Amino acid sequence: MRLTVVASATLLAATAFAQAPQQPAGAVPLDPTVNLNAGRLPGSGRGRGPRPPSRPTPHLPDGTVNLGPLPGEKGVWEGNAGATLATNVKGLDNPRLNLPTNLKIADVPFQPWARAVYNYRQSTTTKDDPHVRCKPSGGPRMFHTPYGMEFLQLPEQQRIIIIGVGGPHTWRTIYMDGRPHPKDLDPTFAGHSVGHYEGDSLVVDTVGFNEKFWLTREGIPYTEKLHLIERFTRTDYNTMKYEATIDDPGAYTATWTGGWLLQWQANEEPYEYICQDNNRDVKHMYGGKREGGDR
Image 1 (cartoon, rainbow, N blue to C red):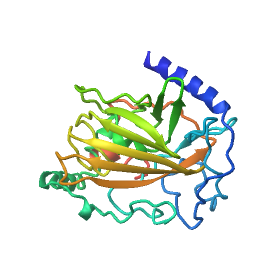
Image 2 (cartoon, one colour):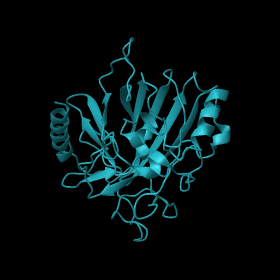
Image 3 (cartoon, one colour):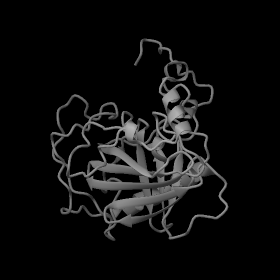
Image 4 (cartoon, rainbow, N blue to C red):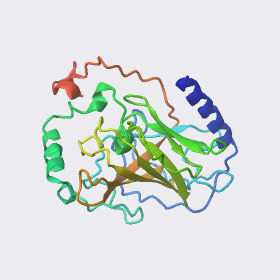
């Protein structure tokens, strides 16, 4: 039943995108000296030199930012697997992108127990990450998983669905109809998300997380008190700025923000990716090496 819903959503989204004109104005030019190659999909340009200048940020007929491809094209957003939320990332010091780049892990306002958990997870070589055991990933963890993701904007249904390809192959729903968060939420991996547009940014407010996943791939902890604000800004056709504000009085002494860049992968599309609980990824689950070497 859920697969049927997603398939229908994909068809509706394709119809909406088919009406979207290309907008020639309003883009922020990408600095060609910025290295955004980390985490690209196989065959998507690694080793082929710098990309040509990006096209402008696309928009839907109503002027809303288009978070997907133009008509007749396809593509996904890569998951920048090498990105981290709370450390400086090469390429994010472009002043035109205005990202919070000065934050380092020493500056994160951990409570003592949360810092101890974070430090412990640095010694486990990610083998304890629930993601490698096919558990869904909420919040920022979803956005640095390899193999891409797509945003399905469904204006008639007043919602957006974000589909991830790699790992658990899950999706999350963002309600765009102005509804409030329910008062008595049953905690889930994705939480309950409501969103709105601010110019070329999608701003998403999420509460109601369970504590069954890592907030980021490097092991940033959190609690069920987490209130997450995410901002997705398509600065030009090829670039998405991702910012996450962490408001969790259960794990931190103050609110803090981190972020990274997602890069558009033209001509790619989601494909079948099977993740099963009995997978044997010896590198990530046991700290060993895969057959044929450590890849």
